[in-house]
Length: 114
Image (cartoon, rainbow, N blue to C red; front, side):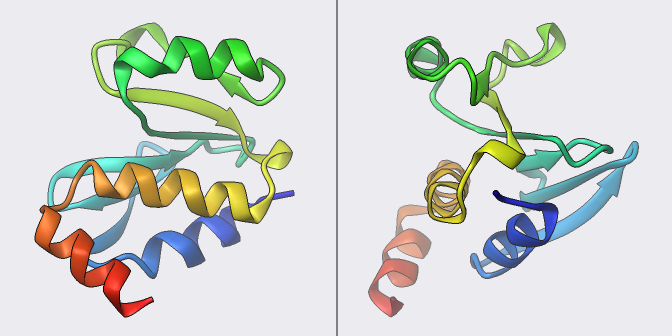
């Protein structure tokens, strides 16, 4: 079961990430690009995900993943039920979302340091 504390620990370990509280949502971003957002009740995680793949992700595990809110459909975004995720899966989702926001050079340096 993943929590906001897990999201924070993982996200803040990714280079160039900053945390912000915007409209009661905790958001993690690189520069001005938000790649993860936790709902005020800490039950949902929104994160960057390729638009063309999100329907398949949601269909594969509807108990875990949800389509973005109508206002977010134009973005590369999907939502997950945070308590259903385990920490390893959360780490993979956040890292993939972060990779969508940073230059390839930053990604390469990060993965080389692991």
